[in-house]
Image (tube, rainbow, N blue to C red; front, side):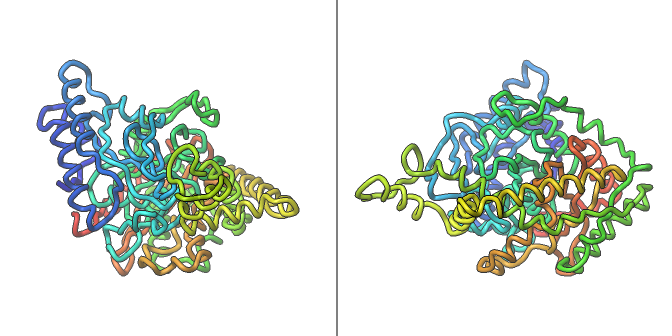
Length: 486
Protein backbone atom coordinates (compact mmCIF):
# COMPACT_ATOMS: atom_id res chain seq x y z
CA UNK A 1 0.00 0.00 0.00
CA UNK A 2 1.29 3.47 -0.91
CA UNK A 3 1.31 5.70 2.17
CA UNK A 4 1.02 9.42 2.76
CA UNK A 5 1.36 9.09 6.52
CA UNK A 6 3.97 10.88 8.59
CA UNK A 7 6.22 9.07 11.03
CA UNK A 8 4.06 10.25 13.92
CA UNK A 9 0.84 9.05 12.28
CA UNK A 10 2.28 5.61 11.54
CA UNK A 11 3.77 5.22 15.02
CA UNK A 12 0.58 6.39 16.74
CA UNK A 13 -1.57 3.87 14.83
CA UNK A 14 0.81 1.10 15.87
CA UNK A 15 1.04 2.18 19.51
CA UNK A 16 -2.73 2.56 19.91
CA UNK A 17 -3.33 -0.86 18.39
CA UNK A 18 -5.19 0.40 15.33
CA UNK A 19 -2.62 -1.59 13.37
CA UNK A 20 0.66 -3.31 14.15
CA UNK A 21 4.25 -3.01 13.02
CA UNK A 22 4.09 -6.26 11.07
CA UNK A 23 1.16 -5.06 8.93
CA UNK A 24 2.90 -1.75 8.28
CA UNK A 25 6.12 -3.54 7.30
CA UNK A 26 4.29 -5.94 4.96
CA UNK A 27 2.54 -2.98 3.35
CA UNK A 28 5.80 -1.09 2.79
CA UNK A 29 7.59 -4.16 1.43
CA UNK A 30 4.63 -4.86 -0.86
CA UNK A 31 4.75 -1.31 -2.21
CA UNK A 32 8.51 -1.59 -2.78
CA UNK A 33 8.11 -4.88 -4.66
CA UNK A 34 5.20 -3.55 -6.71
CA UNK A 35 6.89 -0.32 -7.77
CA UNK A 36 10.47 -1.47 -8.18
CA UNK A 37 9.87 -2.68 -11.71
CA UNK A 38 9.01 0.86 -12.80
CA UNK A 39 11.25 2.88 -10.46
CA UNK A 40 14.29 0.62 -9.82
CA UNK A 41 14.63 2.38 -6.46
CA UNK A 42 15.73 -0.69 -4.48
CA UNK A 43 18.71 -2.99 -4.97
CA UNK A 44 17.58 -5.33 -2.20
CA UNK A 45 14.14 -5.64 -0.60
CA UNK A 46 14.31 -7.54 2.69
CA UNK A 47 10.82 -8.95 3.15
CA UNK A 48 11.77 -11.65 5.64
CA UNK A 49 14.04 -9.41 7.70
CA UNK A 50 11.51 -6.57 7.80
CA UNK A 51 8.66 -8.81 8.90
CA UNK A 52 10.82 -10.48 11.56
CA UNK A 53 12.01 -7.15 12.88
CA UNK A 54 8.46 -5.73 12.90
CA UNK A 55 7.21 -8.74 14.84
CA UNK A 56 9.93 -8.08 17.42
CA UNK A 57 8.73 -4.47 17.73
CA UNK A 58 5.16 -5.66 18.24
CA UNK A 59 6.29 -8.02 21.00
CA UNK A 60 8.33 -5.28 22.64
CA UNK A 61 5.35 -2.90 22.69
CA UNK A 62 3.41 -5.34 24.87
CA UNK A 63 5.87 -4.87 27.74
CA UNK A 64 7.82 -1.66 27.21
CA UNK A 65 7.21 1.99 26.40
CA UNK A 66 7.04 2.70 22.69
CA UNK A 67 10.28 4.06 21.22
CA UNK A 68 10.15 7.13 18.99
CA UNK A 69 10.25 5.18 15.69
CA UNK A 70 8.27 2.14 16.80
CA UNK A 71 7.40 0.16 13.66
CA UNK A 72 8.27 2.96 11.23
CA UNK A 73 9.53 1.52 7.89
CA UNK A 74 12.71 3.04 6.53
CA UNK A 75 14.93 2.59 3.46
CA UNK A 76 18.73 2.81 3.52
CA UNK A 77 21.08 3.91 0.74
CA UNK A 78 23.28 1.06 -0.44
CA UNK A 79 26.53 2.66 0.73
CA UNK A 80 25.51 2.47 4.41
CA UNK A 81 26.28 -0.84 6.12
CA UNK A 82 23.42 -2.95 7.45
CA UNK A 83 24.42 -6.32 8.89
CA UNK A 84 23.26 -9.15 6.65
CA UNK A 85 22.09 -6.95 3.77
CA UNK A 86 24.13 -6.18 0.68
CA UNK A 87 26.29 -3.08 0.52
CA UNK A 88 27.30 -2.74 -3.12
CA UNK A 89 27.50 1.06 -3.37
CA UNK A 90 25.86 0.59 -6.77
CA UNK A 91 29.12 -0.96 -8.00
CA UNK A 92 30.11 -4.25 -9.56
CA UNK A 93 33.43 -4.19 -7.71
CA UNK A 94 31.82 -4.83 -4.32
CA UNK A 95 29.84 -7.68 -5.79
CA UNK A 96 27.65 -9.48 -3.28
CA UNK A 97 29.36 -7.98 -0.22
CA UNK A 98 27.34 -8.32 3.01
CA UNK A 99 28.92 -6.42 5.92
CA UNK A 100 29.22 -8.21 9.28
CA UNK A 101 28.31 -5.06 11.23
CA UNK A 102 25.90 -2.13 11.29
CA UNK A 103 26.74 1.50 10.71
CA UNK A 104 26.28 3.53 13.89
CA UNK A 105 23.25 5.31 12.46
CA UNK A 106 21.65 1.92 11.77
CA UNK A 107 22.14 0.75 15.36
CA UNK A 108 20.54 3.97 16.55
CA UNK A 109 17.56 3.59 14.21
CA UNK A 110 17.00 0.00 15.32
CA UNK A 111 17.23 0.99 18.98
CA UNK A 112 14.49 3.55 18.28
CA UNK A 113 12.20 0.85 16.83
CA UNK A 114 12.64 1.45 13.09
CA UNK A 115 12.08 -1.37 10.58
CA UNK A 116 14.50 -1.46 7.63
CA UNK A 117 12.79 -2.73 4.48
CA UNK A 118 15.72 -2.64 2.06
CA UNK A 119 18.72 -0.98 0.43
CA UNK A 120 18.22 1.72 -2.20
CA UNK A 121 19.91 2.19 -5.55
CA UNK A 122 22.52 4.93 -5.96
CA UNK A 123 25.18 6.26 -8.28
CA UNK A 124 28.28 4.08 -8.06
CA UNK A 125 30.17 4.95 -4.87
CA UNK A 126 27.87 7.99 -4.56
CA UNK A 127 29.49 9.63 -7.59
CA UNK A 128 26.83 11.26 -9.71
CA UNK A 129 24.00 13.76 -9.98
CA UNK A 130 21.43 11.68 -11.84
CA UNK A 131 21.61 8.06 -10.60
CA UNK A 132 22.59 6.97 -14.11
CA UNK A 133 25.99 5.75 -12.89
CA UNK A 134 24.70 2.75 -10.93
CA UNK A 135 25.98 -0.60 -12.17
CA UNK A 136 22.44 -1.89 -11.60
CA UNK A 137 20.46 0.50 -13.78
CA UNK A 138 19.03 3.99 -13.51
CA UNK A 139 16.48 4.98 -10.87
CA UNK A 140 13.38 6.62 -12.36
CA UNK A 141 11.77 9.79 -11.03
CA UNK A 142 8.24 9.09 -9.68
CA UNK A 143 7.00 12.38 -11.14
CA UNK A 144 8.02 11.27 -14.65
CA UNK A 145 9.74 7.93 -15.16
CA UNK A 146 11.45 9.23 -18.30
CA UNK A 147 13.42 11.60 -16.07
CA UNK A 148 16.21 11.21 -13.53
CA UNK A 149 15.54 11.42 -9.79
CA UNK A 150 18.82 13.21 -9.11
CA UNK A 151 21.81 11.67 -7.44
CA UNK A 152 23.58 10.12 -5.94
CA UNK A 153 20.88 9.14 -3.42
CA UNK A 154 18.19 8.85 -6.09
CA UNK A 155 16.77 5.55 -4.86
CA UNK A 156 16.10 6.91 -1.38
CA UNK A 157 14.51 10.08 -2.76
CA UNK A 158 12.29 8.11 -5.16
CA UNK A 159 11.21 5.69 -2.41
CA UNK A 160 10.00 8.56 -0.23
CA UNK A 161 8.42 10.51 -3.10
CA UNK A 162 6.46 7.44 -4.22
CA UNK A 163 5.15 6.81 -0.71
CA UNK A 164 6.91 3.47 -0.23
CA UNK A 165 8.43 4.66 3.04
CA UNK A 166 7.96 7.89 5.03
CA UNK A 167 11.69 8.33 5.56
CA UNK A 168 15.00 7.17 4.08
CA UNK A 169 18.70 7.70 4.65
CA UNK A 170 21.17 8.86 2.03
CA UNK A 171 24.65 10.34 1.94
CA UNK A 172 25.61 13.85 0.87
CA UNK A 173 29.13 14.61 -0.37
CA UNK A 174 28.33 17.47 -2.73
CA UNK A 175 24.53 17.60 -2.70
CA UNK A 176 23.58 13.93 -2.98
CA UNK A 177 20.69 14.25 -0.53
CA UNK A 178 19.52 17.80 -1.27
CA UNK A 179 19.62 17.68 -5.08
CA UNK A 180 17.53 14.48 -5.47
CA UNK A 181 15.20 15.78 -2.74
CA UNK A 182 14.58 18.84 -4.90
CA UNK A 183 14.10 16.86 -8.11
CA UNK A 184 11.71 14.39 -6.42
CA UNK A 185 9.73 16.95 -4.43
CA UNK A 186 10.67 15.85 -0.89
CA UNK A 187 12.62 17.32 2.02
CA UNK A 188 16.34 16.54 2.29
CA UNK A 189 18.81 17.44 5.04
CA UNK A 190 22.61 17.42 5.04
CA UNK A 191 23.66 18.08 8.64
CA UNK A 192 26.75 19.89 9.86
CA UNK A 193 29.92 17.89 9.23
CA UNK A 194 30.46 15.87 12.41
CA UNK A 195 26.81 15.86 13.46
CA UNK A 196 26.16 12.26 12.31
CA UNK A 197 28.59 9.37 12.55
CA UNK A 198 30.17 8.16 9.32
CA UNK A 199 31.11 4.81 10.83
CA UNK A 200 29.72 2.23 8.42
CA UNK A 201 29.32 4.70 5.55
CA UNK A 202 31.54 3.60 2.67
CA UNK A 203 33.87 6.55 2.12
CA UNK A 204 33.85 8.64 -1.04
CA UNK A 205 35.49 11.91 0.12
CA UNK A 206 36.05 11.79 3.86
CA UNK A 207 36.21 15.54 4.54
CA UNK A 208 32.91 16.07 2.70
CA UNK A 209 30.72 12.98 3.32
CA UNK A 210 27.79 13.18 5.71
CA UNK A 211 24.75 10.93 6.20
CA UNK A 212 21.50 12.76 5.52
CA UNK A 213 17.76 12.24 5.72
CA UNK A 214 14.81 12.26 3.28
CA UNK A 215 11.17 12.69 4.27
CA UNK A 216 8.05 14.35 2.90
CA UNK A 217 7.92 16.88 5.73
CA UNK A 218 10.41 18.71 7.91
CA UNK A 219 8.97 17.33 11.15
CA UNK A 220 9.86 13.77 10.16
CA UNK A 221 13.40 14.85 9.28
CA UNK A 222 13.70 16.48 12.72
CA UNK A 223 12.49 13.30 14.42
CA UNK A 224 15.02 11.05 12.67
CA UNK A 225 17.91 13.49 13.12
CA UNK A 226 17.27 13.45 16.85
CA UNK A 227 17.66 9.67 16.78
CA UNK A 228 20.84 9.32 14.72
CA UNK A 229 22.84 12.45 15.63
CA UNK A 230 25.58 12.65 18.22
CA UNK A 231 29.10 11.73 19.20
CA UNK A 232 30.35 8.28 18.23
CA UNK A 233 33.62 6.83 19.56
CA UNK A 234 33.93 4.85 16.31
CA UNK A 235 34.18 8.10 14.30
CA UNK A 236 36.73 10.66 15.47
CA UNK A 237 35.21 13.31 13.20
CA UNK A 238 31.93 13.35 15.14
CA UNK A 239 31.74 16.37 17.41
CA UNK A 240 31.08 16.28 21.12
CA UNK A 241 28.23 18.76 20.75
CA UNK A 242 24.93 18.16 22.59
CA UNK A 243 22.01 16.93 20.46
CA UNK A 244 19.07 19.31 20.95
CA UNK A 245 15.38 18.45 20.71
CA UNK A 246 14.90 19.15 17.02
CA UNK A 247 11.15 18.52 17.11
CA UNK A 248 10.69 20.99 19.97
CA UNK A 249 12.50 23.58 17.86
CA UNK A 250 9.58 23.54 15.38
CA UNK A 251 7.73 26.21 17.31
CA UNK A 252 6.52 28.29 14.36
CA UNK A 253 8.53 31.35 15.33
CA UNK A 254 9.88 33.31 12.40
CA UNK A 255 9.43 37.01 13.11
CA UNK A 256 12.82 38.58 13.58
CA UNK A 257 14.59 35.89 11.58
CA UNK A 258 17.03 37.23 9.02
CA UNK A 259 17.37 35.31 5.77
CA UNK A 260 20.27 36.07 3.46
CA UNK A 261 19.60 36.50 -0.25
CA UNK A 262 22.72 36.08 -2.46
CA UNK A 263 21.48 37.85 -5.59
CA UNK A 264 24.51 36.77 -7.64
CA UNK A 265 23.41 33.12 -7.35
CA UNK A 266 20.08 33.86 -9.01
CA UNK A 267 21.58 34.87 -12.35
CA UNK A 268 22.85 33.14 -15.46
CA UNK A 269 22.29 29.39 -15.75
CA UNK A 270 19.27 29.26 -13.46
CA UNK A 271 16.09 27.88 -15.04
CA UNK A 272 13.34 30.51 -15.19
CA UNK A 273 10.76 28.28 -13.48
CA UNK A 274 13.20 27.47 -10.69
CA UNK A 275 14.02 31.15 -10.20
CA UNK A 276 10.35 32.08 -10.02
CA UNK A 277 9.54 29.36 -7.48
CA UNK A 278 12.48 30.13 -5.21
CA UNK A 279 11.84 33.88 -5.38
CA UNK A 280 8.25 33.04 -4.45
CA UNK A 281 9.57 31.25 -1.35
CA UNK A 282 11.61 34.33 -0.49
CA UNK A 283 8.45 36.43 -0.71
CA UNK A 284 6.60 33.93 1.49
CA UNK A 285 9.22 34.34 4.18
CA UNK A 286 8.98 38.09 3.86
CA UNK A 287 5.19 37.92 4.20
CA UNK A 288 5.55 35.73 7.31
CA UNK A 289 7.69 38.34 9.02
CA UNK A 290 11.25 37.37 8.23
CA UNK A 291 13.74 40.04 7.22
CA UNK A 292 15.40 39.43 3.85
CA UNK A 293 18.94 40.82 3.68
CA UNK A 294 21.31 40.73 0.73
CA UNK A 295 24.56 38.86 1.26
CA UNK A 296 27.58 38.22 -0.90
CA UNK A 297 29.44 34.93 -1.39
CA UNK A 298 32.22 36.11 -3.72
CA UNK A 299 34.07 32.80 -3.88
CA UNK A 300 31.01 30.63 -4.55
CA UNK A 301 31.73 30.87 -8.28
CA UNK A 302 34.84 28.75 -7.72
CA UNK A 303 33.03 26.08 -5.70
CA UNK A 304 32.50 23.52 -8.47
CA UNK A 305 36.16 23.62 -9.52
CA UNK A 306 37.33 23.38 -5.90
CA UNK A 307 34.92 20.56 -5.12
CA UNK A 308 35.90 18.41 -8.09
CA UNK A 309 39.57 18.71 -7.13
CA UNK A 310 39.18 17.92 -3.43
CA UNK A 311 36.48 15.25 -3.85
CA UNK A 312 38.33 13.37 -6.59
CA UNK A 313 41.61 13.54 -4.68
CA UNK A 314 40.02 11.98 -1.61
CA UNK A 315 38.17 9.43 -3.76
CA UNK A 316 41.38 8.27 -5.42
CA UNK A 317 42.79 7.54 -1.98
CA UNK A 318 39.66 5.98 -0.45
CA UNK A 319 38.94 3.70 -3.42
CA UNK A 320 42.47 2.27 -3.48
CA UNK A 321 41.23 -0.41 -1.04
CA UNK A 322 39.04 -2.01 -3.72
CA UNK A 323 41.64 -4.26 -5.31
CA UNK A 324 40.02 -7.72 -5.48
CA UNK A 325 42.11 -9.12 -2.64
CA UNK A 326 39.98 -8.99 0.51
CA UNK A 327 36.35 -8.77 -0.63
CA UNK A 328 34.14 -8.09 -3.59
CA UNK A 329 34.75 -8.67 -7.29
CA UNK A 330 38.01 -10.19 -8.53
CA UNK A 331 38.98 -10.50 -12.19
CA UNK A 332 39.47 -14.10 -13.29
CA UNK A 333 42.42 -15.63 -15.10
CA UNK A 334 44.89 -12.89 -14.22
CA UNK A 335 48.41 -14.33 -14.70
CA UNK A 336 50.05 -12.40 -11.84
CA UNK A 337 49.20 -10.02 -8.96
CA UNK A 338 49.65 -6.70 -10.72
CA UNK A 339 47.55 -7.88 -13.64
CA UNK A 340 44.84 -8.97 -11.20
CA UNK A 341 44.80 -5.52 -9.60
CA UNK A 342 44.61 -3.79 -12.98
CA UNK A 343 41.94 -6.03 -14.46
CA UNK A 344 39.82 -6.05 -11.30
CA UNK A 345 39.66 -2.26 -11.18
CA UNK A 346 39.21 -1.96 -14.94
CA UNK A 347 36.31 -4.43 -15.01
CA UNK A 348 34.83 -3.60 -11.60
CA UNK A 349 34.62 0.20 -11.69
CA UNK A 350 32.27 2.11 -13.98
CA UNK A 351 33.38 4.99 -16.23
CA UNK A 352 32.48 7.85 -13.85
CA UNK A 353 34.36 6.31 -10.94
CA UNK A 354 37.38 5.70 -13.16
CA UNK A 355 37.23 9.31 -14.35
CA UNK A 356 37.25 10.63 -10.80
CA UNK A 357 40.02 8.31 -9.65
CA UNK A 358 42.19 9.49 -12.54
CA UNK A 359 41.41 13.15 -11.86
CA UNK A 360 42.18 12.70 -8.19
CA UNK A 361 45.42 10.86 -8.82
CA UNK A 362 46.49 13.62 -11.22
CA UNK A 363 45.87 16.52 -8.81
CA UNK A 364 47.77 14.72 -6.05
CA UNK A 365 50.74 13.80 -8.23
CA UNK A 366 54.19 15.32 -7.98
CA UNK A 367 54.38 18.63 -9.80
CA UNK A 368 50.63 19.24 -9.69
CA UNK A 369 49.79 19.00 -5.98
CA UNK A 370 50.59 22.66 -5.26
CA UNK A 371 48.92 23.94 -8.41
CA UNK A 372 45.65 22.07 -7.89
CA UNK A 373 45.00 20.35 -4.56
CA UNK A 374 46.80 22.85 -2.33
CA UNK A 375 45.26 25.79 -4.18
CA UNK A 376 41.79 24.24 -3.91
CA UNK A 377 42.17 23.91 -0.15
CA UNK A 378 43.14 27.57 0.06
CA UNK A 379 40.02 28.61 -1.85
CA UNK A 380 37.97 26.30 0.38
CA UNK A 381 39.14 28.38 3.33
CA UNK A 382 38.11 31.57 1.53
CA UNK A 383 34.66 30.10 0.95
CA UNK A 384 34.34 29.29 4.65
CA UNK A 385 35.25 32.89 5.41
CA UNK A 386 32.54 34.09 3.00
CA UNK A 387 29.94 32.15 4.96
CA UNK A 388 31.29 33.37 8.29
CA UNK A 389 30.88 37.00 7.17
CA UNK A 390 27.43 36.35 5.70
CA UNK A 391 26.15 34.67 8.87
CA UNK A 392 27.22 37.71 10.86
CA UNK A 393 24.25 39.53 9.31
CA UNK A 394 21.74 36.69 8.79
CA UNK A 395 20.54 33.48 10.41
CA UNK A 396 20.27 31.46 7.20
CA UNK A 397 20.87 31.85 3.47
CA UNK A 398 18.34 30.86 0.82
CA UNK A 399 19.34 29.60 -2.64
CA UNK A 400 17.92 27.27 -5.28
CA UNK A 401 18.82 23.64 -4.57
CA UNK A 402 19.30 22.71 -8.22
CA UNK A 403 19.64 24.99 -11.27
CA UNK A 404 17.00 22.94 -13.15
CA UNK A 405 14.16 20.56 -12.56
CA UNK A 406 14.58 16.84 -13.30
CA UNK A 407 16.09 16.32 -16.75
CA UNK A 408 15.55 13.45 -19.15
CA UNK A 409 17.39 10.18 -18.66
CA UNK A 410 20.37 10.21 -21.05
CA UNK A 411 20.20 13.97 -21.60
CA UNK A 412 23.52 14.81 -19.90
CA UNK A 413 25.20 11.46 -19.48
CA UNK A 414 27.77 12.15 -22.22
CA UNK A 415 28.61 15.66 -20.99
CA UNK A 416 30.37 15.35 -17.60
CA UNK A 417 30.79 19.12 -17.18
CA UNK A 418 27.08 19.77 -17.69
CA UNK A 419 26.34 17.00 -15.19
CA UNK A 420 28.76 18.42 -12.62
CA UNK A 421 27.10 21.85 -12.83
CA UNK A 422 23.94 20.34 -11.34
CA UNK A 423 25.75 20.58 -7.99
CA UNK A 424 26.58 24.28 -8.29
CA UNK A 425 24.34 25.35 -5.40
CA UNK A 426 24.95 22.40 -3.08
CA UNK A 427 28.72 21.78 -3.01
CA UNK A 428 29.36 24.97 -1.02
CA UNK A 429 27.78 23.48 2.12
CA UNK A 430 30.00 20.39 1.95
CA UNK A 431 33.15 22.42 1.37
CA UNK A 432 32.33 24.68 4.33
CA UNK A 433 30.98 21.85 6.52
CA UNK A 434 27.74 23.71 7.24
CA UNK A 435 24.20 22.24 7.25
CA UNK A 436 21.84 22.50 4.28
CA UNK A 437 18.11 21.78 4.01
CA UNK A 438 16.17 21.40 0.75
CA UNK A 439 12.42 22.09 0.89
CA UNK A 440 9.90 21.72 -1.99
CA UNK A 441 8.47 25.07 -3.10
CA UNK A 442 6.30 24.45 -6.14
CA UNK A 443 6.05 22.90 -9.56
CA UNK A 444 7.48 24.05 -12.87
CA UNK A 445 5.34 24.76 -15.94
CA UNK A 446 5.96 21.11 -16.89
CA UNK A 447 4.62 19.92 -13.52
CA UNK A 448 8.03 18.99 -12.05
CA UNK A 449 9.12 19.72 -8.47
CA UNK A 450 11.31 22.67 -7.52
CA UNK A 451 13.15 23.00 -4.21
CA UNK A 452 14.89 25.79 -2.35
CA UNK A 453 17.87 25.38 -0.06
CA UNK A 454 18.49 26.88 3.36
CA UNK A 455 22.11 27.07 4.55
CA UNK A 456 23.06 27.92 8.12
CA UNK A 457 26.07 28.22 10.45
CA UNK A 458 27.56 25.18 12.14
CA UNK A 459 25.06 23.32 14.38
CA UNK A 460 22.14 25.51 13.21
CA UNK A 461 19.92 22.54 12.27
CA UNK A 462 17.21 23.64 14.76
CA UNK A 463 16.89 27.05 13.06
CA UNK A 464 16.94 25.59 9.53
CA UNK A 465 14.34 22.96 10.41
CA UNK A 466 12.14 25.62 12.04
CA UNK A 467 12.33 27.82 8.94
CA UNK A 468 11.57 24.87 6.67
CA UNK A 469 8.65 23.77 8.85
CA UNK A 470 7.17 27.28 8.93
CA UNK A 471 7.27 27.38 5.15
CA UNK A 472 5.55 24.00 4.82
CA UNK A 473 2.85 25.05 7.27
CA UNK A 474 2.24 28.23 5.29
CA UNK A 475 2.38 26.49 1.92
CA UNK A 476 0.75 23.04 2.21
CA UNK A 477 1.18 22.67 -1.54
CA UNK A 478 4.84 21.94 -0.77
CA UNK A 479 3.62 18.53 0.42
CA UNK A 480 2.31 17.65 -3.07
CA UNK A 481 2.99 14.11 -4.28
CA UNK A 482 3.42 12.69 -7.78
CA UNK A 483 -0.14 12.42 -9.16
CA UNK A 484 0.11 8.70 -9.89
CA UNK A 485 1.05 8.00 -6.26
CA UNK A 486 -1.21 10.58 -4.58
